[in-house]
Length: 404
Ligand code: C2E
Ligand code: CA
Ligand code: CA
Image (cartoon, rainbow, N blue to C red):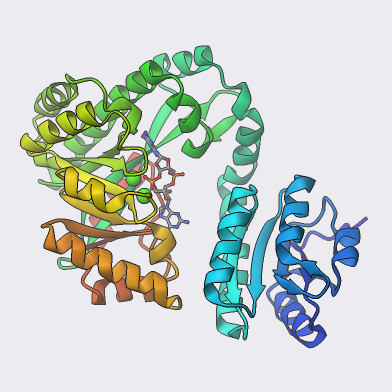
């Protein structure tokens, strides 16, 4: 058994020379490396200790997709980096497939591999791991995943009642002024036994209980507005964004309720932005359109989230009165080295502007991506490069100190 505390990386690539170089570079970055050249050998060496895998999709005798499928059957907590000499689109399809199989994909690299890009992926893995360990989120996320199915409506009711749902705030940076224009509020569940749980682990469950989702959303809007009114004393005009699940866009009274809340905190309607994910919007289309239109008429901002990954994006931005378009981070983060992703960002920026919307790039993790998005004409940027989501008191510190 391997007692090493270094992160454990297993490589499968039939090209021995390349495998060797990949292995050496990974060792330099601080990984404990095992190299295999054949699928059989790979599965033999795969163990509970394996944390990271580099997988060449083109290995003679087996199909890389078979390896992915078999890997998903093992139910190990591994992150996979895919590499291949095949066309970029094949690699993208394989990535999508791997995600469908429930595998965590940390990088996709085209052969010939550019060393710099490879090192960037590796150091990303190390720093993600450090951040996760430092904040304790790595373990809580895993616990939360296991606990997912066990989340009961009663537990959620208690959480709402006892104010266990807390908001963290991530700044959106205005590229023209170089200042923070607003904060997006992101929910975390501060669970008394399980620690901090991230939204991807409980929002899907809540979506099956619309009345609980509505109750949580209402409390969170209040929490976000209260915080915004505090910032507003020192930073007049600062706005806050809330995420509203499409399942909550069913009560026709919602726009009035939200307006009253805004008024009660002495804020202006344009200091609230409602972010809606486009993918499920088309359900229950009449009331959604009715509600979103009335939210908009009141001057509240309306943002289409994760733009580009929905199946009917164009139809939705044509139909709904959005004021802001957020380009999904899957296009933004790879734009410097993925031409197709860059074209999609450019098209989204152009389209957003032609329709009179503010365009936000989300998922900016590096200076390079931030500069590129700015150069391409994006209005705002959001991402770990500027700041991770912050607790309320750290957000006000950030507001005071930040300048692009
Ligand atoms: P989202 O609305 O697209 O929020 C952005 C997510 O991306 C957040 O994850 C944020 O922490 C993460 N993120 C921000 N910058 C970066 C970056 O540079 N790199 C990477 N890799 N990630 C980045 P989070 O907080 O885990 O939220 C996940 C999703 O859960 C949100 O996606 C949103 O759909 C949902 N959600 C969060 N808060 C709420 C809420 O209050 N209500 C509802 N209905 N949904 C929420
Ligand atoms: Ca959002
Ligand atoms: Ca988003």
